Length: 235
Image 1 (spheres, rainbow, N blue to C red):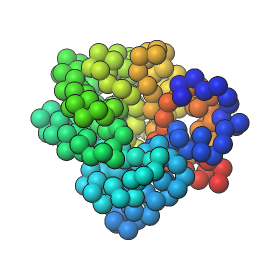
Image 2 (cartoon, one colour; image 1 turned 30 degrees about the horizontal axis):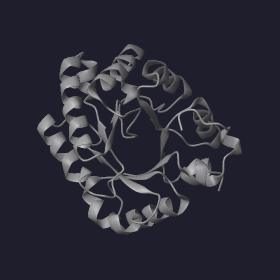
Image 3 (cartoon, rainbow, N blue to C red; image 1 turned 90 degrees about the vertical axis):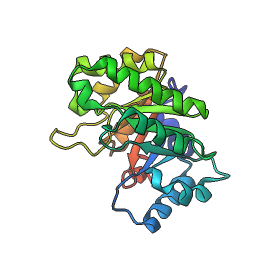
C-alpha cells in the first residue's frame, strides 16, 4: 500500500479503513467500552485494533474470523523499561494467533541523550522477539520530542535493527506541543526509509483532508483515535 494506484478520494470505505490502526488505548476505558470500540473497528474493516496488552484474551473473540486483527502496544507510553522486560512483553502478546503486529515505544529519553548504540541493541532484541512468532514490529519514536537529525537517525537505526515499521507518536506525550503525523515529518521519515521500512503515522490525524493527504503521499498505516475514525472515513 506504500504506493497506491489510485487517489484516496477514489477509494472505497473498506479500502480506506485498511489503512487504520483503530486506537483503543486510553487507560480509563472500561472493558465494556473497549469491547464496543473493538466491535466498531472490526465492523469497519480496520487493519488492526491497537490495545493495551491486558486485554488480549478479552478481545480475541471479537476479531477472530474477521479481516481485523489485534495490535498490542508494549511498554506504552514511555518506552523506559529494561530490554528484558520489553522482550518479555512482546513475547507475551506475540504468541496469540489474532496478533498481526506489535507496537513498542522507543526509549526516546535515550535517543535525546544520543545513546544510539543502546537504542539499537534494545530494538534488535525487540524485533527478534516479534519475528520469532512471525509478527511484524512497529517502533514509536515520539517525534514531537525529537529534532530532525534525531528522527533521521532513528529511521536508520530501525532499519539496522530489522524493524518493520517506524511510527511517529504515542498520543500521550506531555511537555511538548502535539503535532503528530504532519505531512512534513512523514515525508522526512519516508525520505530516510526509502523502500526498506514501512511508515505509520499517528497523532493528530483528525480530518479527512489530513488522512487523504498521507495516503496520497504513500503512507502504509495510520493510528487514528476512536472519535476521529468516522470523521476520516467520511461517515
